[in-house]
Image 1 (spheres, rainbow, N blue to C red):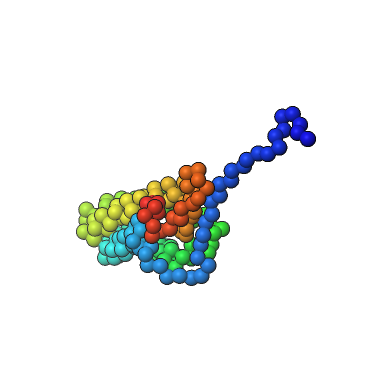
Image 2 (cartoon, rainbow, N blue to C red):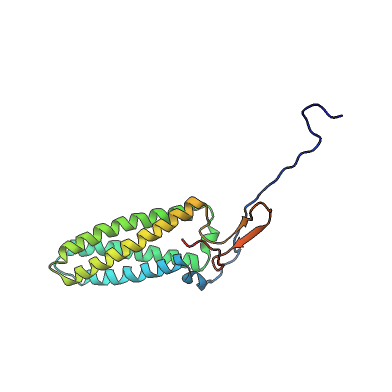
Length: 188
């Protein structure tokens, strides 16, 4: 019996998005060819060069110590993050909002590098090594700022920090797999 206003059948369309991850530890050097990998590699190199330049100064220990703290902390944290990505450990700790955490980390370190580079630039009038450290500090500030921008974009769009994500096709119910080595991988 069919009641008035109640159809016998109805159609429901369901769209799903799934995230795949590797279930074992994998060494994946292809991450170094992605934009986030290139940024992390450049940050590590600039951190180390800036640290060496700042430690050559003996006349302004407070400036060189502050710069050394900023550059070495950034060096080690970025190096650990790079290894987490290369070994796909990011996928093992899904509870951590990696995009948001890296966005905050990169934003804070861009600001800290700004203060360290300004301090080194002020003292750089007297010490060439601090002038060089200031230059590398501003380069690092730019790199961390760019990384923060890309992490923010990825966080707002809901992209996973690493792994594959199935993205539904336009109304067809099929899905396209996006991986870090595919041409459809977001450039953040």
